[in-house]
Image: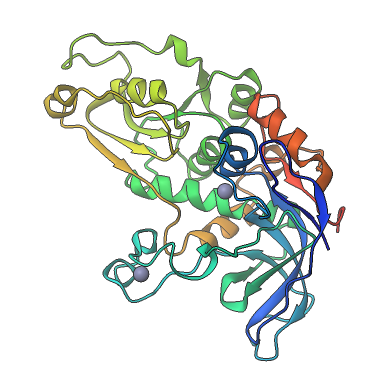
Length: 345
Ligand SMILES: [Zn+2]
Ligand SMILES: [Zn+2]
């Protein structure tokens, strides 16, 4: 099969590799769409040494089952599916408390092991336990948004759930940022502001119903007890940028809460006096709620989010992956870019 094989920074040629061999409980998925994630950008564009040569990226995919192992019972050939969350142990204290994002075995079970191969390829193998069927009303292209939407829903959970009485600031209007906007607006939150430097992303967030600001215009209070005019109850920090983390904290009202959602390289400088005087809460969100993929699929299929706005109209062939990553990195493409390894199914 054809796959976009990582060889180095901006070097991801299309090569022929073996179609995976199925175990008894595995299924083979003909990939329809696979979204380009911020983590793929890190490997492909940013961080020399982060990607492992010979691997295939891509974890936000949908497709059709074309073969099944001899003991598969949950799904059948022909089913349209998405890849679900990576495996969790199911028995540690966090899994038992329905917080699989904190599973003590994460990174050691299932999909995270070293020979993991992604879906920037014509076929992707998964255990039947890890696939979810796509609701009938949802197109394959939009179903491929399930993973980043599950990330956005988890960020909202970590912020205490969507509350129409609260004011939300989202720093960073990339996919997790704009999917958070779409999810908040869909459940009736009216006051969502996005701070984002790129004009194309600001325009997208506006179309989704947010107000938008340039981060440079956010107020900078000088004293730790000073609260800005029109402060926010919740900040979802989706950019991973140090300046946005520092500025986001300063936009909170007393008792406000900030969630770190975007992973960053440069640690922010945080004034503990601002946190204690105003009794702020800073927390993090990693991956998904225990039922995050099911809820994300349901939301995407509900008609309450404008799914066509959330994806770039033009799909990208395997050979166009690097160029698309560079365009995304330069802020030229605002919505989620979908790679179609088999052409449109
Ligand atoms: Zn992702
Ligand atoms: Zn666990």
